[in-house]
Length: 170
Image (cartoon, rainbow, N blue to C red; front, side):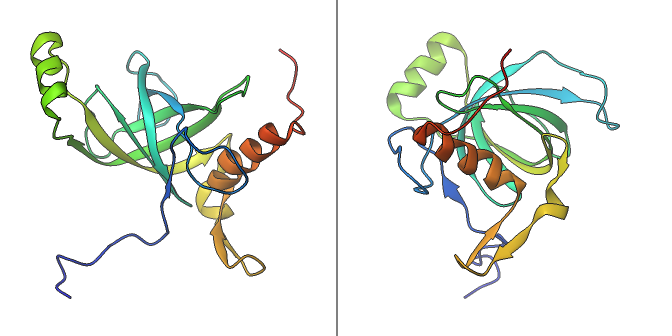
């Protein structure tokens, strides 16, 4: 296999699509809101933008939306799981951003509305204040790589679907 054809990903990706709602099937569509923040991760530099998640991994998140971002932009991300009252807060750095080749119907919509869709890959740094890198580990029982990213998305989602997730009252 040529160097160009190799998959450079270190960890498995899990699709996120709303059609699947049962334990540990990693297909779950979520609403994502994000803002650009300064290099110190403190000051918000933009309004909130809305996107839809595409997939998640041990250390990253991919989403699609109409806002173009640049490589190395630092983002504050809120992930809204179905039925959850509060979002999961993530902080990450843009690894890549590319325009999505639209279908014929989307090209017509793009011409009318002037909106382009982008796919964005983010290397996650923190989830709800916890370091992603420090949380990555291999679960030998289930033979899967795991982290605070997957726990926050799939652990909480599993409990939400089972009705056992106790959320703080607002």
